[in-house]
Structure formats: C-alpha cells, structure tokens
Length: 140
Image (cartoon, rainbow, N blue to C red):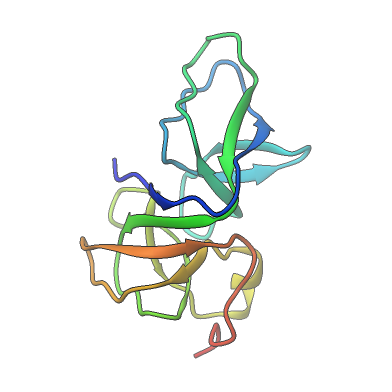
C-alpha cells in the first residue's frame, strides 16, 4: 500500500471521528462523511479530507484519529501528475492512495491537492495537500 509521507508540516492534524472497528494506517488518504467522520479512501474521486497523522488500530477503543488537512507530502502517481495541476484520488492501479491529474469541474469537491512536481505512473512526487481547493487550471 502506497502511503503519503509528510515532508513539511504546515498545519497541525485535527481529530476526526472514525469507527472503533476500523484499521487505518498512518499516511492514508481518508474520505469524509457526516458528521466529521473519516474512513480510508476506497476508490477514484473520493471526497478526500486529508491524510492520517497516526495509525488507527482496529478495536482499540479509540473513535478519533488525527488527520492532516494541509502540508507538503510525498505520494505515488497512479498515472500522469503534472506540476501545478490539481490532483484527485485514483485506484485503477489497485491502490486507493495513488493520485492523478484532475480534469473536470466535479473535481472542486474531489480535490486532494496541487502537484509540486511532475510524475508518471508509479513514480513518487511532492504535492501540497489542499482538499477541496482546486487550482485555477482544473479544466485544462
């Protein structure tokens, strides 16, 4: 499983609710549901809220997990990622933690962040975690 590795912390992680019976590894993209609840990303274009700052162990009695909603991270490309482009989650490669360039208006609610480097499928690259904050070239 590809993980998102924190390189520069620009914001402190925020506690989100999660299911006690759920295991979520550190560095996992998490999707948002109501009320302020997270689960591991499972597929393409999930509504991503951030990246877990700690591991959540299943059935450990905890129902909170800290989540980064900003920062500079290293991740794996699941296809083309172009410097300056908005990114979204992608799982066609079998890993819901992969990222690709976003190319449609719906991305404004599916945005993970902005690519700081160009990468192709399988390469690691730096990106700015910025959920829901699409760049100006989202439709390019």
